[in-house]
Image (cartoon, rainbow, N blue to C red; front, side):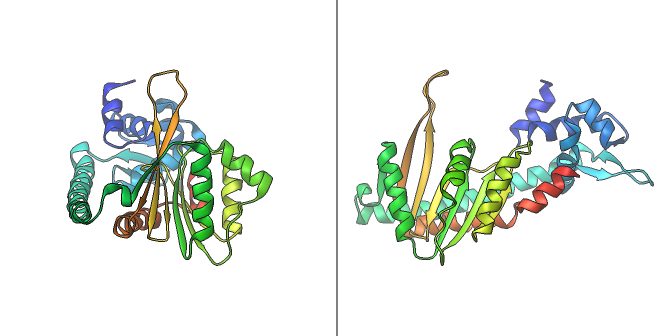
Length: 267
C-alpha cells in the first residue's frame, strides 16, 4: 500500500477514503467512475466515500454541468482534521481530568472492588446481562461491533426481545460494505421501537444501563492464530456512566440513520 495512504489511515481515514483522496490529489478533477477506476474503490461504494470526504472538507464538487470532484489542498483540508484532533485532545483531557477527580474521590471513599467487577466466564456474563436487561428502568445505550453472525441468527430465532416502555439507543459499526442481512436485522430493532444509528467505527463494545452501570467488552488477542477470548468490565458507577452516556449521545446525533446510510451507499 502507498505510504501516504498508510499515513492518512493512521489519522482516521478509512482505507477507501485515503485511496480516493490520494487519487484526487494527483488530478484536476474526476468523475465518480474515474475515481473508482483509478483508486480501486468499488463503484457501488464510491459515492458514499466521496460524501464522507466532502463532510470532512477534503473534497468538493467541481464547477460545471457534469458531476466531477476535486480535492481540497492538503494544507487547507488537513488543517480542519488537525483542528478536529486538537479539539478532541482538549475534550479528552477535560474528560480525563473530570474522571480523575471521580477516581480519586471514590478511591478515598471505597475499595475498587465495591464498584468494579472483572468478568471472564461467558455463561456468567450472559446471565449478568440478562438480569441487567430485566432490571433496567429507563434506557439502554449500546455500541455494537462485528462479527454480527450470532446477533443475526439470534434475532431470526427469538426476535429482538426488547422490553416495552424501555428506551433503546443502538450504534452499530458498519464499514465500507453493505450487508443486506444485517440491515434487515437493524430494521427489526427499529420496528420494535429501538433507535438505531450506523457509524464506520465505534470505540468499543459497550452497554450502558440507565446511567448507573456500564459494561465494557474487551478482546484478549494473545498471539496470532489463537482464539480470541473476552474480558468484560462491569462498572457500577453513576458518574462514570453519565460521562459515557453523554459521549454516546453526541456520537449518536452525528451518525447515520439506516435510511441515510443506504442512500449514501447507493448514491
